[in-house]
Length: 126
View 1: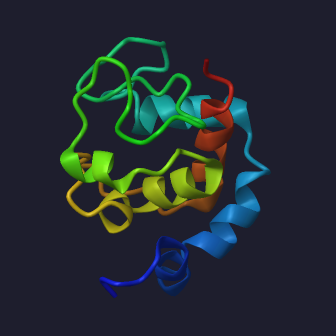
View 2: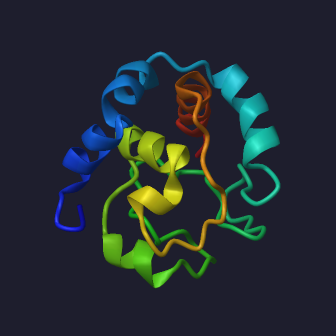
View 3: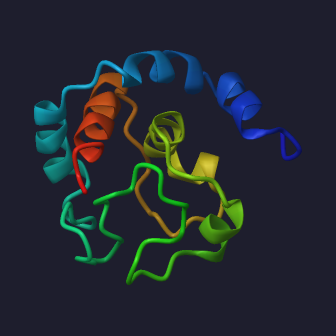
């Protein structure tokens, strides 16, 4: 699998198709609650505020590994993608699968509804 492109790998893992279809239906209010519980210990929703991980304000469309004030892993920087809903969805589901070598120690959120809600919330952050 090491030579597979990301969409093919995600399809094999069963991550992309159901998740991408649901991502557009996320509930930002519910996502805020899930964010606080699942992400808020390490990530801030406030621009420029770095906790143990980068702020997720403005993450949609931002190049991976380029959060201001945070030193990302070389694996994330080398990955070189921009954070859009389908990639965020896959990454939140299984960070180490999507970006092997990431510093993110979170094992992943299997619930596609909660992931879609988080992404809807993240899209409100500037």
